[in-house]
Every structure is written in structure tokens, then in C-alpha cells.
Length: 149
Image 1 (tube, rainbow, N blue to C red):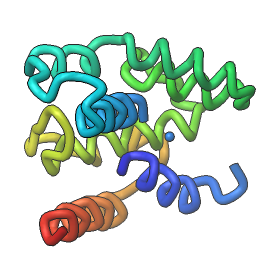
Image 2 (tube, rainbow, N blue to C red):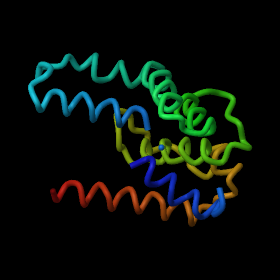
Image 3 (cartoon, one colour):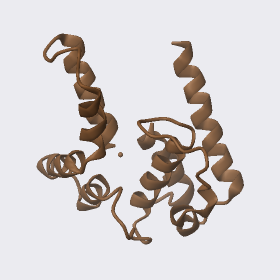
């Protein structure tokens, strides 16, 4: 979800110019569904692994192994690092999309009080309230569609 939102925002902000936690959880779920690992994973494991920096370090190593451009390795490695590089558009987009997901309670954490327009990512990207509201609506619509499945 975050990568889809980042792609949409990237086209808007930088027409000429992806998510470790989700990928790791998806892999864990796939392994559980195939019986390769126990279906009774401790909740602490499910919450702590994506919450640690392990997923970003491993994701960066994988991106390097796949010979992806360095900017993608940085995005995979640094989405939670402070201070953020306000000149790295793709990193800003991924960070903003992650915060938007948190705001609408997609993922492990939820904080409906996040003021997206006040984030340094939105400000650095020059995104206003209308664009950010459209992004929230897209996310909410995706939640509604997912619940219908």
C-alpha cells in the first residue's frame, strides 16, 4: 500500500524522477499459510521484528544484491531515520505514505491525530491539505475494498 501511494505522489511531485515491514509480514504470513512455520507465532515476534531496524537493514542488503540504484537502497534503509534528507524526494514520499497509513490505522500502529500537512515531508514536497486529504480518501477506500474481500 505504501509503495502504491508513494508512486502516485511521486508522479504528482516529481513526474521525471517501495516497504520493508509489509514485505516481511507478507513473507511470514506466506510461510505460516504453507505450514513452513508455526501458525502460532508469538505476537511479540510479529510486532518486534518489523518494529526493529532488522527489516530495513536486510531490505537494503537485498536491494544491493538485486543491483537496484543506490537511491532505492537509501529508501529501504532509512525510512525511519532522523533527520530526514529533505532533498530525497522518493524517501520523503515513502515516509509521508507511511505516516498517512498510520493516520488511517493501516499497519501495526495507528495514530489518527497525525497532522499530515504539518509533517516535514509534506512541507518539503509542497503538498497542501487538498492533496493530502485525497491521499487519505484513497487509503480509506482501499480499506473498504479490502474488507469486502
